[in-house]
Length: 242
Ligand SMILES: [Fe+2]
Ligand SMILES: [Fe+2]
Image (cartoon, rainbow, N blue to C red):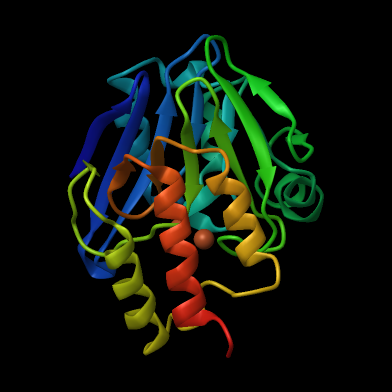
């Protein structure tokens, strides 16, 4: 079952829980003059995500497809989306575009944004932040929507289970629990801890986001700077110094 929740004005969380993974896969749809979808989900999720988008706007009008890094849950269905939506263009880091996206999944060249560069979709403004290896992968970047203070934060704040769409309660405790569990099984070393981790999280905290839209788990609404500081602490505790 795919669930749709408006987590900020014109920002919709489209969420499908996969019991076999004990994990929600979330995509975020921004309804604006130039509609933007952040994360496509895997190819297998495409029919469900497309049908969910169709309840909010015409899927063929999607103009931008954003994502953090090159993985199936981030951009696996990009080809399918670009087949359906003739103007849909991937928006990502230059490394993502040049190293993987244009060659493997894109039907038309991706729009690369430099670190700090803006994309205006109408009333909303997205700034790309290059975040190498945060949450993971060389090409990683995140988008920050500046008018509403929403950070599209990909795997940061990942929580397992079929949790509520959005919460103002602590989500870092659940994130820590996931990290500890994953470190003991086949998903160990999911997130790296590098010399860039702490400064990157500090840079994100300085944006003072009000909404943290995570790919897996509940969206957090509240003091995003504090949540990111807490997240940094947990990552240092669980992953740092190894
Ligand atoms: Fe990922
Ligand atoms: Fe993910």
